Image (cartoon, rainbow, N blue to C red):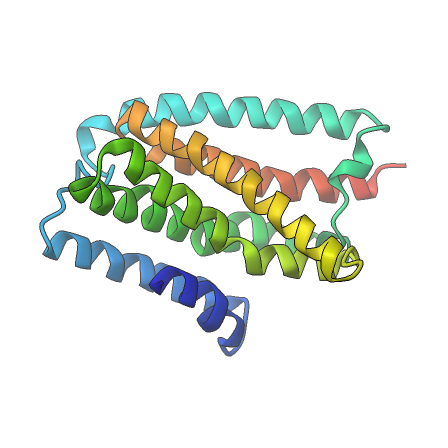
Length: 219
């Protein structure tokens, strides 16, 4: 409920967005980690133990490399470039793209979401539920978390074609996000480190912006 309220009620009304949203996300991640530690969750349970950083880097780096290769193919193939189109990127200059890729996505999206879902929520749920159930809880909530961003994206790209079509698009996107959450959680558990899903998440989002901006500038 807290996470749903944050994304649906708090973020849209922050003053000075998007800069304030980044600051708020960083602060919220810190507060959430402090609360988790206060109730007894260990750094290892949260995926932030030092001993697993190297494994997280290897698994996350491999995933990020695959994502980069996929985007490179999409940019290189003219028939695939329309799949990268995003009206939210079309109006950005080089500096704005850089800020989004290097600041807004890493701090405002990846840090906050990985700490919240693959870190604290997964660990807290794992204390009271079997691992499959804890994973299901974190992944379903991760999907619900993306309802508002999906609506924003549909509106920005003028794809909202009535309530039925919009509802179907939101449902499909949220189901896709649940599946992505499963992959990210698997990486988190397999590597023992939050770094692994964070690197894959970062590559998917940041390189997606770079690929979209690049495709727009190609003939």
